[in-house]
Amino acid sequence: MSESTLLWIEIGFDVLYLITVWPLTGFMYKKRANLSKGNQRIGWLFMWSFFLLVMGDTGHVGFRVLAYALGGFEANPVLIGAGASAKAVTVTFFYWKPNITPIL
Image (cartoon, rainbow, N blue to C red; front, side, top):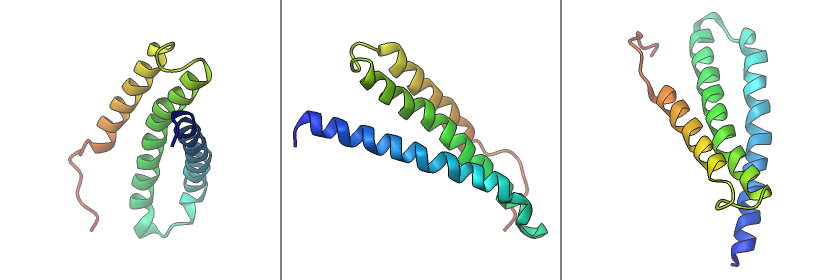
């Protein structure tokens, strides 16, 4: 497969992914009140996990797509670095385990 084809597959996947995950996160926020009392805490944690993930991915993946649109990686190292930094920060929060009592 040519490099150009792989580039367009990656860009298409990245854009489709963001278009899918952002509304899903918003839907989770909007519908959180419909959960039973016993499931509200776990629903809240899932929603925040999705939000942190999509925030990091928007920086990481979104900046990659923007860099491609503006001339490629070599022409936009600041965008690539900013995206990697955004992902590193949100992954840190995503995997951080506060001292909470397990639900299950």
